[in-house]
Image 1 (cartoon, rainbow, N blue to C red):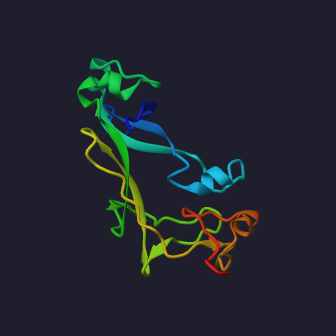
Image 2 (cartoon, rainbow, N blue to C red):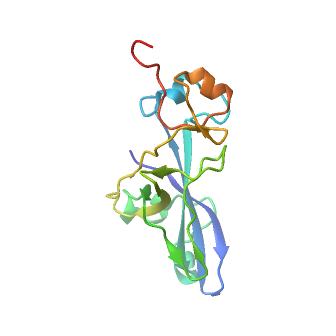
Length: 176
């Protein structure tokens, strides 16, 4: 699926010859990717059907002028040689660090609880794939949590009523 990538903002950096492009794309999630988004459509904080992805790319002021890049520019029209470019989501167990900082792990936005798999925190970042070859990589976390505790319910309506955020549907057990 081809993404429409838009220049959302052009930011200054410490170097006056370098700017930062804030690139953004909107991904519509089909109901088949997460049935909860279909069945609970309109319920706040539960499996949104739209995902906004961002990527920040450093670029010289010369390139901005040469390609006439402006806020609102379509990345694929500015750079037709990268017609398959996409912003990919990559999740891993590797924390990214830089001078003066370190990446925070993924958290459940409703509870603030760190999302983990087998006791290891999950880290998420985006990557600009110019040729479109980088696929989305997700790690399914261990717990569905509600209000800071592990959800014990097999009932979707119970989780939704408590503002539960989850990425996989919780279905009733067979014979329950």
